[in-house]
Length: 447
Image 1 (cartoon, helix red, strand yellow):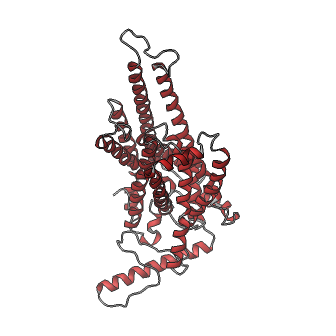
Image 2 (tube, rainbow, N blue to C red):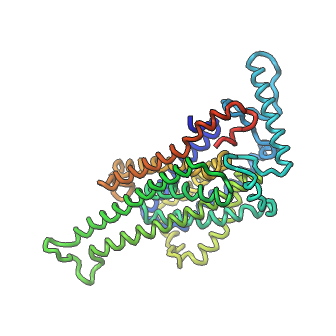
Image 3 (cartoon, rainbow, N blue to C red):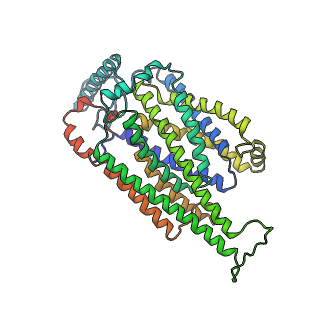
């Protein structure tokens, strides 16, 4: 195996992939149904994140306030985890085995607490590539009060989410997901090296380069599809003699369709690039606070959402109309369409679930590793969009298979998937070399 994750980590990663894909599909369907309100979607996004504060409160209540003070430890290679401090009475062979596992877990917990008391910020998550320079690079977190820490990722989240939902207006959901996940992987590796001071192996740099090539191929495919669709419209607005069938006082000519398609393509790409930059900074800030400062993930997510919701509401009320979204028009649409209103009620809960799995994936691995696995969302988004288009009978929703543009997109996705394999290839050797030292690592330390 290239990735020696526990069942717990695998559940987090798979759930992150599935819920993230569902989020993109649902938002794109809303846009294709006529509800193009990215600022409203952004507010719902932060509302969903804010609900994570309730999850944090429940976790503390159900664990007598000790849920995050004494985390569960898992020994790599074991299928079952046990909480420190609970010992079954000795008896048969199975009880003895459990007793030994818990004894090892207690030793690991004691070691972790002693390290924490020595102010070593390398606590949770992946320690791959971290060094003394990494410790020095994150010492600034100790000078920030805990209640101010979520402001930093919250600010990046506000910019990131606004640009993300706006980009779906101009770019197909599957293409946007491919470009976003590919770019975020490449940028997260660069940020991890420059800011987090992680040592990145040559094999991983090679994997990032392969993923970047796949991103370029997908971008080319998207440009080809946009241009081909515009050319098809152009052919429809000219008659057999080559004359424009629209009068000069009419709406637009076929040439205008091509110009609009090209401008939309450029706009979408710029939005995606900016979104990826802010997203990587957000992910890295979350990783540092959770792993170097032991900040509870659900509390961090909830406070991020609260800050984003407050600032987002101010922007929406003061500048919403200037940014192209009239709040009164949005309310009118919701009053006329009860199904859309019901959809809006359920959307924050989808954002909540997705956000929890996203931030938990960062906690148990790293922001860099999370962005590797996010690439698999693109396949689910694409399959869902194709199924919706051909099974719904409505050509306005979903995505059609276009020739040859969709083949280019498929080649780009396969290239990015190959980059993931290259990225993880060296792990097989590392795992075989370290299997004999189980007491030195926990599941959270396996990247």
